[in-house]
Image (cartoon, rainbow, N blue to C red; front, top):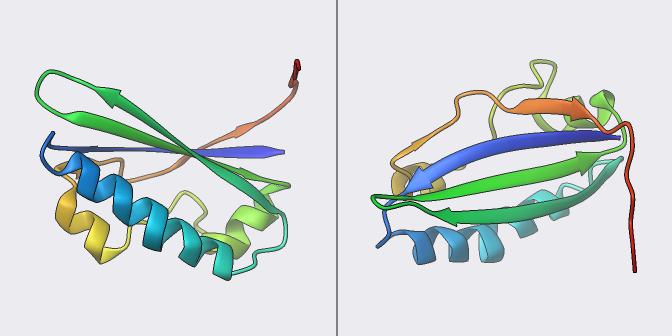
Amino acid sequence: MVARIWHGWTTHENAPVYENLLRTEVFPSIEQKQIKGYRKISLLKRLHELEVEFITIMLFDSLQSVKDFVGEDYETVYVPEKARAILKRFDDRSQHYEIINELVYD
């Protein structure tokens, strides 16, 4: 299993707009691609004094599944133009980690 992690930052005023865009357009468009091996996406938010940080964590079965999502240069970010217009700044490359252990408690 591979975790694809990406960070983006926006203003406090734009944070609700960006979050809504992710939930209503960006995430559904990713699901519609029906990428084999794509498992889920999580959205994290952290308030800072001058901005709001968002982190997405996508889970894929393999690096090949990530490549099927964004291409051979699998660190390429997926940031649609509407999102770019709202963000102050964002990672120019996504990070990928192999999940080697996971504990789940009820």
